[in-house]
Length: 488
Image (cartoon, rainbow, N blue to C red; front, top):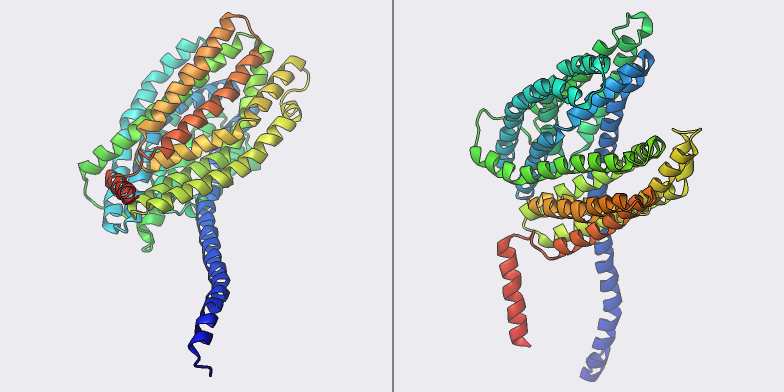
């Protein structure tokens, strides 16, 4: 052993220099493992949630597919009735967001008693709100069909179909509260597995009773209505049974009602409901604009929107993931985690949706040919629409992620203002001007693309401004910045 002080002093820097790369590699390894863990959490929420959204879209088409054998009038009445029911979905989304935003925060804070209380309030509120929703839908159905002026046959069939299906709302609203609550806990697999089972059952029951499959008598439209409602109640009952029988699941019903959580939930959820309603109205207005260019153009446009709707499936999943993980991070008072989850959501979602967007843009012509074969004008209308929306899929999914993150933070007024302002001023108004100037319909498609990019910029600045950060953390950040400035 060498006790020479000069030797020890010379060897110390050498030892430190050798240790630094080892330490750096360990730190980088830990950082990579944390990133992989966070990506895993995002995908565990986003993939089942997105696929479940896809099954929801499929569910709406199953009855319509089998009804096609009965004739065009039946198809038209069921299709229009489904569109009528969708008008009431903003009410459903209010409690969906209210449950998710509050339960995710409570879960992040590890306040399990609060989770049970919030879930109970949202579940019982869903039952209470569903009754007037069903009644309004029931009594308004005839006036809706009369307003459309579609003829007595389609009106009578549609009103009859809705006289049964309006009673879906109690099951639909309670089911959505339960699904939202599972997502808030980061568990979207259980609802997804249940959804797979009931979707398969729905196909079998519709085939059996609408078309008379397996030797059963044909019940036609009656079967379509009752199967649609029955499947929804069955799915809701299975979810409720799972919650009440599994002890490990944190969601439990309590025979109590705390009005504070309902009031706070409505404050968060109502802006989302308004936003959803305005989006539906704007879609109808755009359809009205496009219909002025002729039947072939509007046919291609509707085919394009139908193809595009399947691309929303992964988009919805990443929005739910951003919403849940934002709420959990804020509940745990970990602002840096919230930012990191949103950043990773943006990267992954942009990669996925960017690829889908390119496929829509490149193969738009062939995708349109699946639905239209003999109308060249309609084919070109659908193709150019898919090119426009395909090239704007990345900014669109970024809007979805930012929207979900702000909802998870409880700042639902921000997405409401951005979406309404952008759609009205930058989409609908320019379209109206173009129509009056007699410009091509393809200019309308360009406006849709450009507006999506501008709306993304608005969302980006709104999120990075940090208004979603709780006031206490903003004050602490301001104080720390002030101190650092004073030191310099």
